[in-house]
Amino acid sequence: MRMTQLLPLSDQSIANAAGILRGGGLVAFPTETVYGLGADACNAIAVASIFTAKNRPEFNPLISHVATVNAAFALGRKTPIAAALAAVFWPGPMTLVLTREDHCPIARLTSAGLDKIALRVPAHAEAQRLLTAFGGPVAAPSANMSGKISPSRATHVMQSLAGRIDLVLDGGACESGVESTIVDCTGAQAIILRPGGVTRDEIIRVLAAANLDPDIGNPPAPDSDSAPVSPGQLASHYAPNAALRLNVETAATDEILVGFGIIAGSGDQPLSLSATGDLSEAAAKLFDLLHQLDAMKLPKIAIAPIPETGLGEAINDRLRRAAAPR
Ligand code: TXA
Ligand code: MG
Image 1 (cartoon, protein in one colour):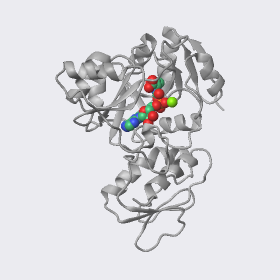
Image 2 (cartoon, protein in one colour):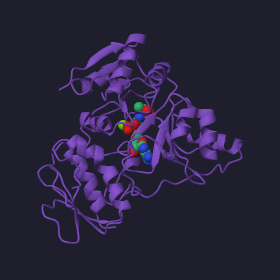
Image 3 (cartoon, helix red, strand yellow):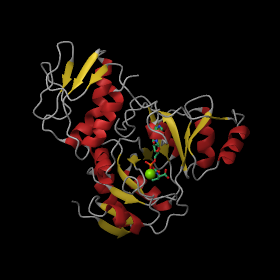
Image 4 (cartoon, rainbow, N blue to C red):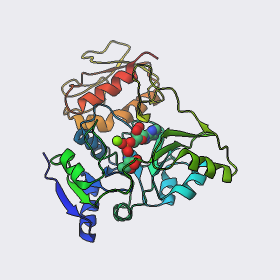
């Protein structure tokens, strides 16, 4: 249980909010679309607590918010399509999915292990002030409990998340209430992953004016077992190359065991999602560890049982997807 403060926007409350973000806390703040539930995008433990607060049973990749177009392109690779869209629609209700730049400090949990990251430069003046005061990318999904409608007022956020987050900055009603349009800019054609505040026609017009391919590509096919889908549930979701076996207490001789809690991993320096059995730590480490194991080119990986409580549900969901036959 957290003490949730509700504060009107002021220099003081924005400075408080930036301090809370620096300390790994959770701050809800207004944007011109909906209220976001923000955490330091580079702090995997803080990002894990977003999922706990929202009671999310799976890890959807999150949008990272920054104050300026330059800050965005320092994190995600600028393509001609991205440059054209950013020039017209940023700051604004537009999110661009870009390839993570080398040395991008955004935590892998923020992008749910994907090599692509979603970036947005919001136009809302107070969101801008918060992002400038914090000085780094802020991961923020809509500030509501999982499965509930997106909040367009601070009171909606309080009704949904009071006691679960540290601060709500009250900036009154959001201008639009419709989420940002999400466009994947990593390929030869722009792909609209989620319709939103910026329309398809506006996007086509801007691409044509910049002499780029004005056709909008189709999103990749969703997982066969889970329709309908949000973009985060797409089959392109990161999966390791190695075969994964779950709920393993004793590894076979050809497997490397990743431990959790009292079950220690195999090897001299035992790999573990969390030696103390801390689910936030396990969530924070999950995608880094999967990437690390992939880089080691191990054929078979076994994972110790993770309890199906709290964040364990999201961790197990992701592990089951990673272990599913493909
Ligand atoms: O207007 C908005 O976009 C609000 C405000 C707070 O910015 N945010 C918002 O976030 O709606 P959320 O988490 O509710 O939705 C983000 C969507 C998810 O459906 C997620 O799957 C997708 O963005 N997304 C994030 N990163 C992605 C990535 N790397 N690739 C594909 N989709 C991504
Ligand atoms: Mg949402």
